Image 1 (cartoon, rainbow, N blue to C red):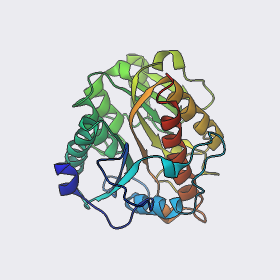
Image 2 (tube, one colour):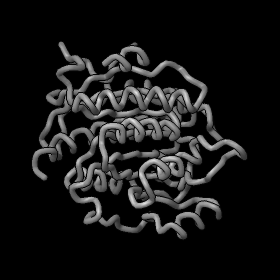
Image 3 (cartoon, rainbow, N blue to C red):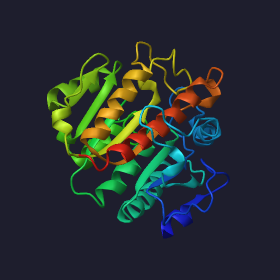
Image 4 (cartoon, helix red, strand yellow):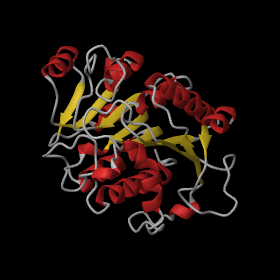
Length: 293
């Protein structure tokens, strides 16, 4: 736990649970207040703590599964220290995530902008030889440089991840906006990309080790207006939850993140509420199905 203690600090916790500690936990929450490469609306750095505030208001018992979140061993390790350099934050995340995975725990990153996912992926592949990256996103995030000369930003993160894990190990769902450069790249390389109404092939993912990234702009702005780059004609919250349920049933989720929440542009806290519910549901699904595959 050396890197975790060095790079993070706890101000207040996602949950109040008597005696909870790192050693006895199965899920480790990590806030990443980083938004230095945003191209439209800054403010994602406030996302992690806003999710924590909203989480306090949720009922811990889940009607669908019959599980109580309070019975799941979740430890909130706090936030990474504020950082403006993309390479530095990616390195810090990688070091901490690899440490958590080595301890046979599931890291959960709360963003922060989408650039942070690269650190999560790098941390996972240090410990896991075979990982599939499943990302829910309105955008491809596959530019090679954006802006010109910058190869590590929220708009290039999936391109950098492909360079780490291979073209065949990425699945992107909910896409409805991209550049011509990105479109040509995915067609040429036959990358698995699914539009809003397309069904993800679960047979490909069955029994795979998976890293899940949820960019909240995959949702329609009517339900998630508080994001860095809102894109109309998105998927519903119900459909996203259904997809996360299926992935939890068929795959081994090794880590996940929720990114691009921007509380500064939220409408009465609706996106914050949605993000905290997604966090709760996905942990509950992983817990419910982890021993039934």
